Image 1 (cartoon, rainbow, N blue to C red):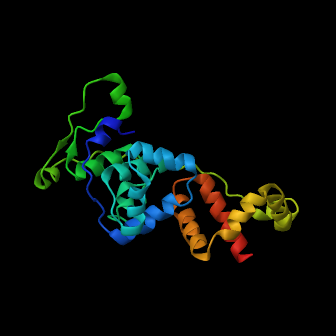
Image 2 (image 1 turned 45 degrees about the vertical axis):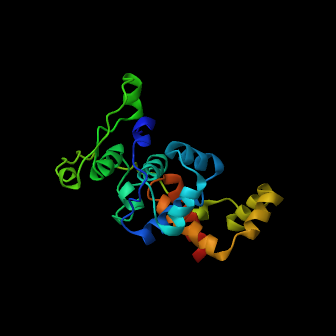
Image 3 (image 1 turned 90 degrees about the horizontal axis):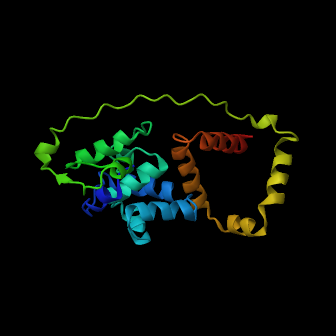
Length: 215
């Protein structure tokens, strides 16, 4: 991961290339996170919740927040800022290339920071010089093949599954579910589509959701 020292040196300016796409994608990534994951992002980026709110309401986002989202949730930074609609397999080189594209060099990773206690020399180049930075060779990664669950194999069928979920869900959880609006459910579904590209468990969950919707 990018070191805390390097993140602190990034300028607090908007780096979004498409405000509408940034709003939708940040909201879809942030909405389903639990409190622990949200705090992890806030702590990593060293920001307050109102900065997150600006990102999913106005489409403005700082580089340090893009890096936090990208590394913690393993999402392509160019996808977050709306520069690309392609969701490439996550690799830390994507983050370094993203920062290089903004004109930053001398990026330190957390592991490198443990070996050397020197303060990182982060340099901001002009736009013209930034274009001359050679691109880091991307690593080609192949996702392991994991079998997708077949809902028909559930003992007792979907009715039994629903009964088990209701039994263990608890009244408080049921209360929160009842308060979720139709628009929020649509956003949650969109977030599942996005996260299923990076997480095999989310992919299995999305398969089950699709099955329940058409069954």
